[in-house]
Image (cartoon, rainbow, N blue to C red; front, side, top):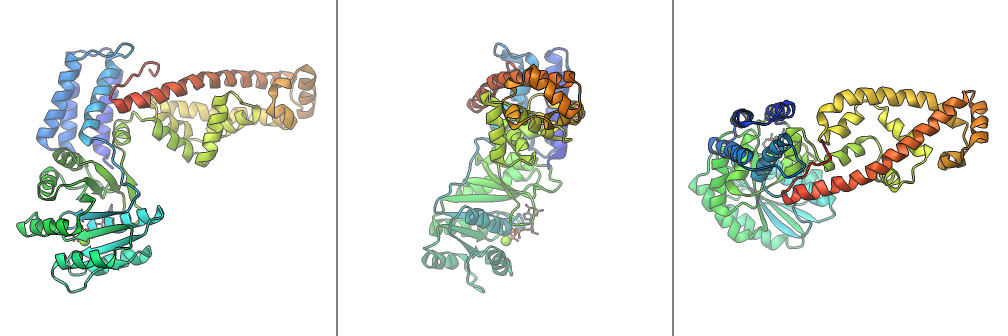
Length: 450
Ligand SMILES: Nc1nc2c(ncn2[C@@H]2O[C@H](COP(=O)(O)OP(=O)(O)OP(=O)(O)O)[C@@H](O)[C@H]2O)c(=O)[nH]1
Ligand SMILES: [Mg+2]
């Protein structure tokens, strides 16, 4: 998704990283690049100009905080400005509420109603769907089918031509459900008739949330469309659908900028599970290829350990209680191709990822081969407390494994080295936390990361 925008922006970031120094010419060039990338991705012209102008102004006028290079500062400015467009992260609350979905024809309202219903059901809330679309002939049946898939009741009055009546009836009949999701009619464009209808529906339903459902492939028109809906009923959030497709995505950025309403979810497919919570900072980090800690933790999750297990290993590593079994486990993880790359891509050192991955995989595989035999000849006690392995034990282990004593010693040396590294990483974890915190506060200190 958003491949081409991401790629052009990442090229720009690479250009900055590779530059010897940041001067006016580089700033101008980068600003031009960003403008071009945004326009190509269908971001509205004035928004693209405003963003690139902000970048230019700040890059030329502001000084990097002490400890940060001009290069990193320029990257940070770009990151900041993109994040600023998307605004704060917003999540739906897990409480009883009424949600009304609005949007033009075919944007994905009905499908999204089903996805949202499933989302709340999974969180243990009781959900009802209400079919207030009186325009599309089979709208009720479509919603009914979705409801059946997830055992969620669908309220509707087939044949009824007035959406207001359906909503009023529904308000009486489905009181007992905690979450009520209202699907509404679409139109080709925001006609007066539709505006009147959704305004009335809003008065009847008194929704807690009004989400605009917007197809990611809607280009330059997205901002205008979003603003019109916003002016009519006040949008509290945007759900961008079809992010799995070839969307250029700039429309989505424009819509958010035009309404100030944050993106809450993105739809990434036709199935009811294809709904993802949207996190603006993570989204931009990925787009720029600079990653953040959350992505890092996710990558750690993907390495076939469940989250708890990952936390446990992480905690053990960080607590300084680190033994040979832990070391072996870590090598085992690192010996799998792609894993370091994934982890590194979440860090500012992303560009080194692929190369390092290859080296680390080879190195780890070799270590595993070499030391497995040696470790097989150790007792549990020795594996858990390697410190007790002195020369008589070394002799025994060497004999038992049929490997030279030197190899046992080198394994122990390796262990000591790694343990020391873990200690240093403990310091870095704090650094990571502070980085994340400062990113949230808007100040961003990359000291120690470059
Ligand atoms: N690939 C993909 N397809 C989607 C997504 N969301 C919706 N669709 C598809 O888009 C088409 C239109 O979706 P609907 O949910 O019917 O859209 P709507 O806004 O209710 O349309 P109207 O009721 O006609 O206004 C359907 O074929 C959906 O399967 C998504 O996130 N990804
Ligand atoms: Mg529909």
